[in-house]
Amino acid sequence: MEPEPIQLTSILIVEDDSAMQARLRALMREVAGPEARIVIAPDLATARASLCEQRSTLALVDVRLPDGNGIELIRHMQQESPDTQAVIVSAFAEEETILAALRAGAIGYLLKDREDIELVLSLRSLQRGGASIDPMIARRILDMVPTTMPSPLDTASVPQLSPRELEILQWVAQGLSNRDIAARASLSRLTIEGYTKNIYRKLAVRSRTAAVHEARTLGLLE
Image 1 (cartoon, rainbow, N blue to C red):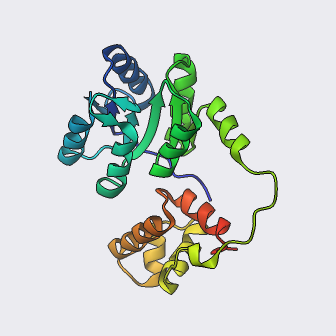
Image 2: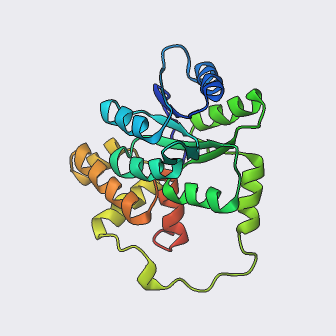
């Protein structure tokens, strides 16, 4: 299935350091263009307020903020602003932090000490629907993957999808849009969007690509 591009029309930068704020703003202007709306939030409270006022399509989030952890914000967005894609931009690369961010729903993890050109390339990949994972982070993730065969899945731990949800998931795996699925199922597009949100919630994912991957891992799809 083709990855879904992200429309970088409204970007939220959650960062308390003024120099880094300016740097990320300049990088996003280069990637998203002059028409994109860019909002700076120096802390979690300001970020939450901004998301309430106007939803962003992308949030670049630091981990350590004056009033808490950026991963908390990503969990908040998954519940309150599920259409906002989040990418961690941090100086820290501890395995525990990386895994916590990805489990919370982040679709990328970038390091601040990279050159501007490296960050721009990663952000452009994100814009095309790719995963913005710093190469060093990606290597660490691969190192965490066990080399031995996993034991059979405990069926009690597999999310229970309804027959309709499984049907819609099959169509998602075939690359159909919500509009196409609605036509096939003789349902409204809003109804299909409701089903897909339930599927995301049950599989603990935030994108169509991740939903298909997780469903195949769990044996819900061939």
